Amino acid sequence: MGVSADVYTHGHHRSVVRSHARRTAATSAAYLLPFLQPGQRVLDVGCGPGSITVDLARAVSPGEVVGVDRARAAVDLTRDAAGAADLPNLSAEVADVLDLPFDDASFDVVHAHQVLQHVPDPVAALREMRRVTRPGGVVAVRDADYAATTWYPPSAGLDEWLALYHEVTEANRTEADAGRRLLHWALEAGFRADRLTPGASAWCFATPEDRAWWAGTWAERVTSSGFAEHALREGLADDVALESLAEAWREWGEAPDGWFAILHGELIARV
Image (tube, rainbow, N blue to C red):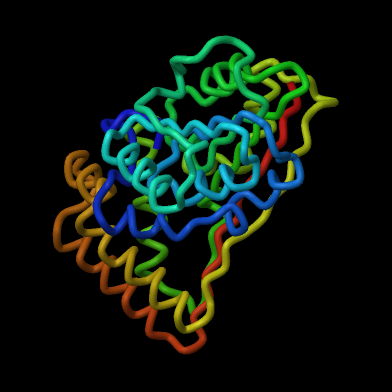
């Protein structure tokens, strides 16, 4: 993500990278795709392992796509992805969403997926994204809303996981329920109301394959990722509690009727 490692709740453990690398533009940026055209210059903020960034580069080729992330490891993964996909129009560099190293009005499209929920000042981040967007261009943001997460069958362990997730993000002074706030933040950042198109979409994990994958990544993340480190450091949980959460994830993943959905807020902001 394009935020400080001290704030970023998930960190860059292999379980997190594995989860993020499964994202594509089709699953995670479908609301933006109608606005992309060949020849545009695009900035992908918080590019992570580059799986979405690669799709953006294909969509606007021969236009240029630049991915930025605070984590050097993420930037290296995006560069590797660009090489593997043979996309000379895709580059990546280390940068902070609150201080982007680009001139005013440098990009036609500025995109950020699951970034604002990890930024202590999302309004300032939106202002900076707008600064580097050309008049007539688009700022596109999508963020989860954890309070709107739902699953079946009921699980006291997953209830505890969700409560702890909110406690960890609150300790980090970030907003887990960012999705519902995107429109509010954009207005606070000075975007014109008549140029904003808010929306929502969801991820759903319910097939045996998806359920096993999602449960497996989170079972590892709750004990080994940045989330676990933050929870332990802040005294919000101990190793025993985190292992209990991991077991709850494994149990849910084995349920033949298991269903899990995450709501995301989306916003197209025209500059």
